[in-house]
Each structure stands twice: as C-alpha cells, then as structure tokens.
Amino acid sequence: MPGPHTIFASPFPSPARGGGLLDTVPAAATRRLCLLFALLGLLLAGCDQPDGNAPVGIAWDRDTCSHCGMTISDRGYAAQVWVESQHRYYKFDDIGCLVSWLHARGESPDQLKLWVADYLHHDAVHWLDARTAWYRGGLRTPMDYGFGAMAEPAEGAVNFETASARMLKRDDGR
Image (cartoon, rainbow, N blue to C red; front, top):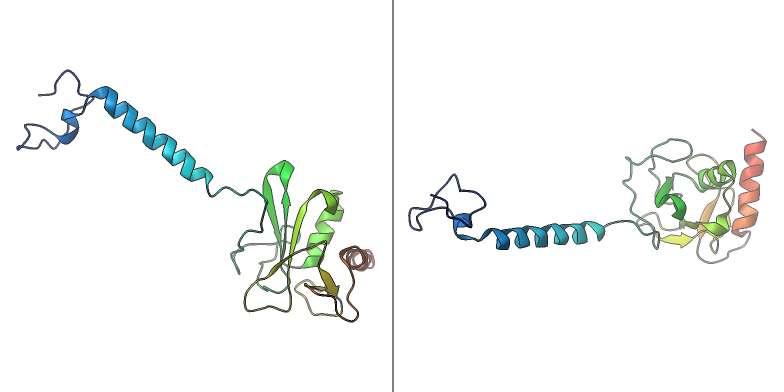
C-alpha cells in the first residue's frame, strides 16, 4: 500500500521491499529529479542546433537544392548559405543556383554566410568561404552554370563578384 509521500504506486511491486522502487522515494525528491532530467534534456537538445558558424552536412543524393529542386549529388559543386534572420541553412547543387537564389530574393551576399565546395576535392568536401574563394569557368557542373570554386587562385580564375555576374548573365540569356 502506498505511503503518504508516494507519487504513485508501482504496478510491479518488489516483494523484497514491500513495494515498488518509486514507492520509497518522497514526492518532492521525485519532482526535483524529473525537473533535473527535463533541464538536462533541453540542454542536450540545444547542443545540436544550427548556429550558422560553419557549414552543415549534406545528405548526398537525398537533400534537394533550395533553388532548382534537384537532388544534391556532386560533392564538388555544392553550396550553402546561412540566413540569420530565418535561423536556417539553404543548400544548393550548383554554385550558380546559390547565386541565382540570392539574386531572386534580393539578398546581399555581404549580409549572409556563404560556403562553396572546393571542386578540386571530390573525395571529401572541403568547404570554402564563397566570398574569398576563386572560381574557374568552363566546367561541367550539375546545372550547367560552369563554375567551380577553389581555395587558391589559378590561371583564368575570377573572384566571387565576377563569377556571380557571369552566372547571372547566363541566366539572362536563357
């Protein structure tokens, strides 16, 4: 039979103790323990929340491009942006999709955090800051914008602003 400090009686009483395990815990201690576990759960849940300080992982062949809707498959041309006002990441299958998406929304790249994949590293994704990366044109990319990003300048490479202008000009010509 439950005592005066019991929250609830266990449906599985322990014969050795004359009742269930929680039957012997005072109600105030049980409430404090529940509160402690609830706070710990909230703390741990917050650990995995995006903060925009680094690019997030892409579920290859499952995540879709925020601009064109195609599946993101090619590790060499992926891109992503963090929009602080929405506390959200957007992912893209082609650098040109990122640029077109920014243009269509009237977003300034200076106000956002942008990352592009280094196209020279197809084995594992190496994320670069889109504004400081260099871009080589004439490549075969998922949506045929033709630009790949790289960390170091190379012959014929252009900066983000120039590459973006060329990608938008390509869109205007279609």
